[in-house]
Image 1 (spheres, rainbow, N blue to C red):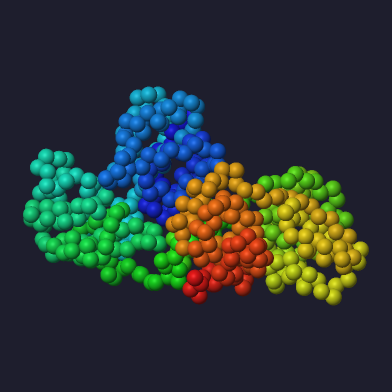
Image 2 (image 1 turned 120 degrees about the vertical axis):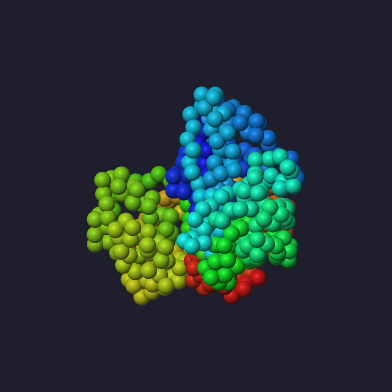
Length: 493
């Protein structure tokens, strides 16, 4: 048993530390605060117990003693616990309090630092927290304490005399009070300042102003929680250093439904184009044990999926073989992703189908004498029969090897899936099985899916969606993530 007090970063899931990302999947329970990215939560293994203990202003929330006791209870059950906090666990995250409580109760713990929004927030708006000639110090201040109170831990007179940078966290509801308190205590009303909302996320927005106009600027810009307030000369650098450029998918919210091991790279690509991305895998790949008795007997091996490649080589390795065993065997594949995975195993595909589906393979082999050619086809059990039937019809001596099957993820549930659907304006389907599972989960609420923009990776998936009653708005010309993104750049809706 052990409790990890983990900082998950300022919001962008890509800013979680490598150490944190490596620890979370090994934990038996996850206790998480508000605003933890879905991508981070999904790093946890499916069987992990999850407990939300977030705090939101004006709403009931789990009190700190209850959180402490929950950590103790889970630990006494022998579980390894990931306690997830936004930013850094010890920067207004009460990580120190929880660590002391665990120590007092004899529970092993480790604090995993995270990138604080106090640093990442200003930087994401083009504001270096310190800058030679402008700010040689940085103070991080909680905005939860009411500036109008005479008693408290904050010395507003001292803060008003600060010549460096002040960063106020959790200050959405006290912008005017902070401005008034600093000016009242002597800070120049023309001091530059900035307010940043949703720092590091695609939805980020910020406004630069002066101390006197800070509240008015925030109101006009519709700034809300969560936000960071930066006060000091460095805030004036935002106009010079913030390289804002409207991205092609800015304002879009996209739900990725492909298997978990493929989702994160896809999500990063969409995020880079400005989309806010949610991940909810609708497919789980389950390995089917198999043995390759004599790979040398094949004249050709056809890979139609990137998922089949590592499983094929895993079996090859179990026989004490590696890429050299394929010497003299023609290797054909569908699509650049499968080609690249083959390359990672030391195999350069001899040919790649121009159309990234089974029909493309047959076009590639058009005019080729396949009679008595020994072909190996490692694939999913539930793959379309088209390619196998077409190869046999041309006289090939075909051996299909089922290396995996697709299934509904074990812990998929309708409520969670539909909550992601509600938050998204676009849903991307990359396989017929994913579309089928979406319909199963939605049940009689299938209209919730239909009212969204539905994108299919290619015509096969689009056709399957049509039969399921969730017609795709369009499908990509190139059946890849890049093809989908190019399609969406064209404002598909």
